[in-house]
Length: 263
Length: 263
DNA sequence: CGCTGAGTTGATGACAATCAACTCGGGTGG
DNA sequence: CCACCCGAGTTGATTGTCATCAACTCAGCG
Image 1: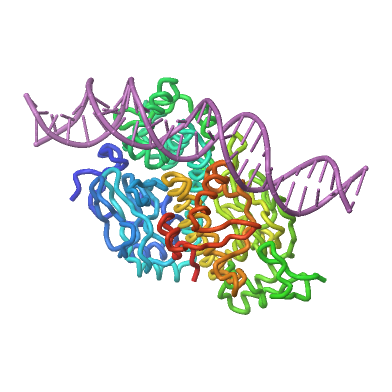
Image 2: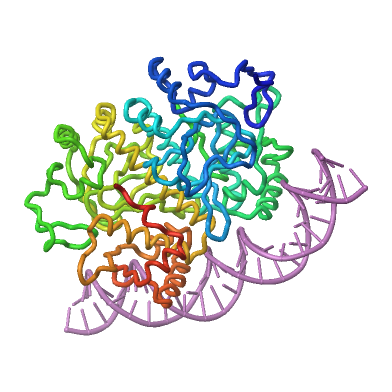
């Protein structure tokens, strides 16, 4: 029996409470953002059966490790995770941040060793699907395949934006883009705290995480972030991101909400 | 009636001849690399019907333009194309090079304006599929959906490698990676000239194209490429790429053939 | 109360960008 | 047919952005 329910690394007891550790798929609050969006009730039963269990993983622990054969694919249920690859000099490149609803661990051949790592940024909860079950779900259920294609296509768009950032944008623009992206994605989920904090979200990334996603060093992130903050565009403080000048930042970063919408 | 048949920007009269400009899908030499790999004969008829026509596009012309609503999706039949996005300062980032068999112009919602551009590097031939036909092909035919997912997943892997390159690798490593990637992809297609040129492929990219893919400037590509060439690892000359030390380069670039295989 | 990890700030250095001049080869038009 | 032109590539000089190294602050915590 859970004391409460965590989303985004923040205790949301006051917002949602689950009485059991095992959420039912049919009642899942993030299902509309997940692979199982819009499934018929029958398909949902299937998917529920495929799901082995929910796991909780502590912040900084790895969910997937590059080069290993993994047993499961996962839907991220709560918290933030980083999907990354490692270079031979030990540096890493975060390719995307997974947020609740995101599907983690799929690749074209599930029997190959996985080519990326996934690490929990906050404590996370995941729904685990054994890869064999996932494979047959994809074989049997066209809706799931279509939805996975759709999610992949949207990821691809974001990936291309990351490439543009990494290859052609200044440190300032890269930071602005990343922060706007995450801000908007959280808002799309409806998981930010509405009301008095309308322009702010819980934000668990360290400057080193940001550096690993933007292709910079933590030191340079510190300097550049300070500059953006001093200009009054936004604030990152106490694990919270506040956007003051969304439009100006959007222009700076060439960011556009449609880059991260899923509907 | 065609005089001959071009693949890879080179005239291959001596290798393959088609008597009509319109290749039949059932007899298509690159089908095994395309979206229509492994389709049943019945599905093939469907796909043949969906295909409107083949087009030839001159080098440097655009096939798709960012922000526009496009009528068609395409299978690249012959030649090379660049998929890219443009930053506000006018610089561009090539996100991938499309080679024969690659599918171009898909995105999760085909009715949205397309978010990337595609430009012919060599003269190219494409098979055009009106987006409505493609949409219904995807709705009706699970094999096509699965295959598109598979192709997308493989693209995603390469995209992540590009991100790692752009974010965390030196100019030398980026070049080595790109050249090995393209070399291997061409070899996988079996479109290189076998025999006396076993370690070489036709290579139509300019140094500026390479720069746009690696996030460098053309000047720096020139210097760095010269350095790699002087070290005897490879040669780029007269629109031809020759690899002398595949293993050493692979190590330098952290490249691995499995990154680009499709089977 | 000291330890730890995250963030800040300064000094210096390296890699790649920029600006500019030049070569070379292939195509074109006079 | 040859001169010229143009685009691609090369090379040198200089600049700039970001990396590196190092010292320090500060908050949280055992």
